[in-house]
Image 1 (cartoon, protein in one colour):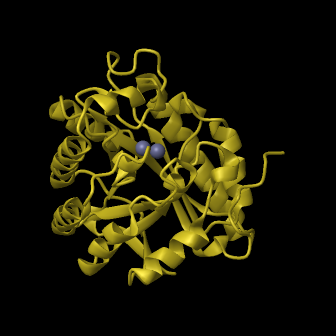
Image 2 (cartoon, rainbow, N blue to C red):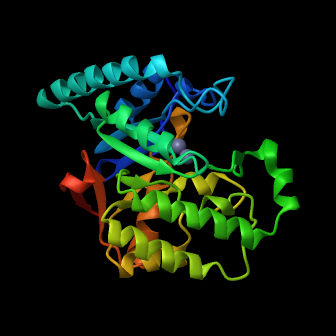
Length: 292
Ligand SMILES: [Zn+2]
Ligand SMILES: [Zn+2]
């Protein structure tokens, strides 16, 4: 039996976890079938599986952060079959989450054309929901603890400036449904004295693009020990009525639905009354809103 997820059984049915991984990406603890078992046991309303899409060979030569290109089609098929199975169980009255086929896509600032192509291929393969993420700047994975020394060679403000410039470029492509972990550069607590200027700019861009922003509980498990985005950032999003998803960024069963009661409280404090769930391309209005 898989370990029980850390979602709260009393409240899990109110939430969608819109960001979940498996060992397909090369750095998770549990396999896709194990994570699916964990999702069944979670009691969640909805789960969106969002494996990392294939990266170029030269960026991820040992497949440590993404799936192989030939794994994309079987990944989608496995999830489609599981989604049907879950639906069948729900129709029989069982308490099983709805499952949606998603993926997490990298915005590679050195190669925007590749980034666009990657999303096109994923959509063509049947991926319904795409998270947009900036994990790398000029090939430097600034969120990788093995590359943390690079932070000491740079000014924190410069890195944040560069990150948000690229993040906004990614937003403006309009091709992503949700922007994941929006203030990821704070992961190791390298934070500018006043980061609020970035929050306002970023919130403005995402509101204009009409896509969703993730509220990720993954940050609670990292050295920064807070949600991505921070509360000040969340307030900027709320003021512009940006729809927010909840995501655990789970790489193991116990992290499915992690910390969602806390996240819901923070959303409410910022004036956000609903969680938004992407059901397909958000630009086509494919969303559902669940009251928090
Ligand atoms: Zn990510
Ligand atoms: Zn992720």
